[in-house]
Image 1 (spheres, rainbow, N blue to C red):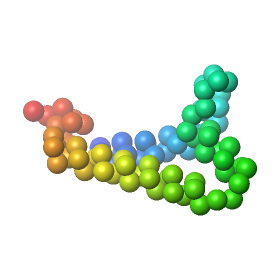
Image 2: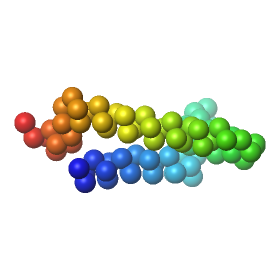
Image 3: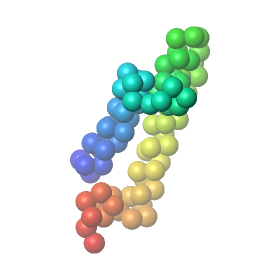
Length: 80
């Protein structure tokens, strides 16, 4: 379970990498962290909190579904 929680925290932390997303992508591509940063600088709105909560909820649901269907040990570690 520790591996799954580390994976989950790394996934959530990757949305914090706005600076890296700005420098790595092409000018025509707008990633989610960049779009969220642009929206946050332009307006004060609870939409950002809603998007963040939705991303955390979707990730948690995906982890629970993987655990119920396959078992996280088998998916993440490769046990048969």
